[in-house]
Amino acid sequence: MKAPAVDPGGGVPGDPQRSSGAPDQLTIANEVDELHRVAAWLEQATAHFDWSPRTAFKLDLMLNEALPNIIHYAYTDQEPHHIHLRVEDRLEQVTLEICDDGIAFDPFAQHRCADDSSLETAAPGGRGIPLMVALSDAREYQRIGQINRLRVVLGQDETGDRQYP
Image (cartoon, rainbow, N blue to C red; front, side):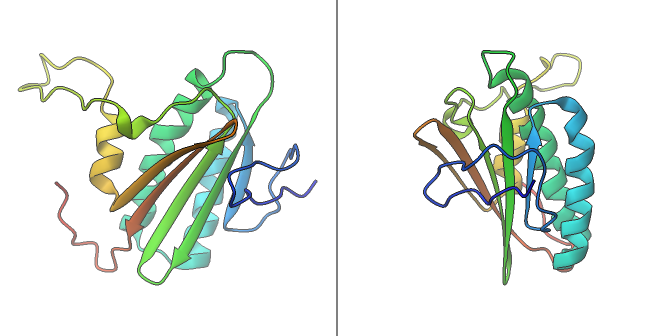
């Protein structure tokens, strides 16, 4: 079945089971086993759009931070749900969009993790959101109806020499 693109108005049309194969979008089930499909899709999109290894790495890191959290924490029932992924490649930037119908959660409104002075005293968890903030040039969360829409914008690193905060 062909998966529709995420409606720009924030709605998630239809009940797709699989992606259309287009390199700019993918729809997955809310299951951890689907993460291998995400990795393959990102590899296909990277080749299609000719992204630098550093841009692909940042996208992979963001997907691996966001998706497991959505899968594990966004749903209060055991029913199947769909998570829609889309990328936009525009000149010098890439936008990653993740839409789900889980509970409302604005990750960018959350407090940053404590700045631990050593690995031995650091508490586990809480570093994914600050990492996504540090790696992105812009970010936005919207709750549109029953849909969470998370967008992050990355400047493309052609030479891979960008310094991270």
